[in-house]
Length: 114
Image (tube, rainbow, N blue to C red):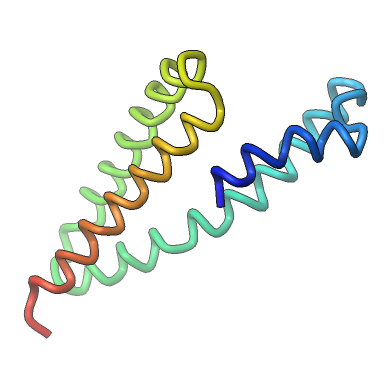
């Protein structure tokens, strides 16, 4: 989804005239688009933390700490990667990271007994 959005969004925003708005208008559109994309990405994490906390009550602080650390690392990676490979390349790398994380969660669920 992100890769498709990075291809379609610039043309769509230009066609809608968003790029000709004043800076505050562009910022408002960026905030709205970011909220729509960020909401689904953030919905799964609390559920995973709750699930892990049932098995190990001390896991929640570690998981939130790990999430914060990875978020800061991802922001730094994006800042260095985006100028070199562009929006599409950065989106592909991010999608790969999410796929890796989802795969690791899936492997852990298969590994543990029911």
